[in-house]
Image 1 (tube, rainbow, N blue to C red):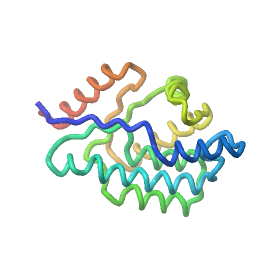
Image 2 (cartoon, rainbow, N blue to C red):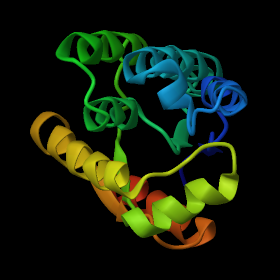
Image 3 (cartoon, rainbow, N blue to C red):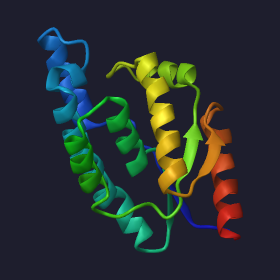
Length: 174
């Protein structure tokens, strides 16, 4: 038996506030309000802060944290949004400051299901073209640079969580 904590963050201060400010000023999204480069850098710092405050304390005590977002998600998003190479390197430095995850599990979710889930949350917009670019960027990034376990993310939370636990157990041979 492995000792795990599930950490699923779907609310981000930068995303919510930039979206709300953008809406007041007539922008359809937080990214368009801030601009892609500023948005990517701000989200990178927010991700790092949440990683250091909400994940690292567990991992430093030998607990496996199952998180819905990894450094690779943010980096793939930065690539998919078409940020400049300079901004990509900056975001990479920020999100990797606390180190890479021990195990990366790619919840490979179809663009259609991802779109529905994002829209359902109601505080940000989803774009099918972006979601498809994101999937390609994440696949390329993980395939070339890092080891990972690929799990279908299209099911309900309980079944996906079960597949993740099984993947971790099989990978670590618990």
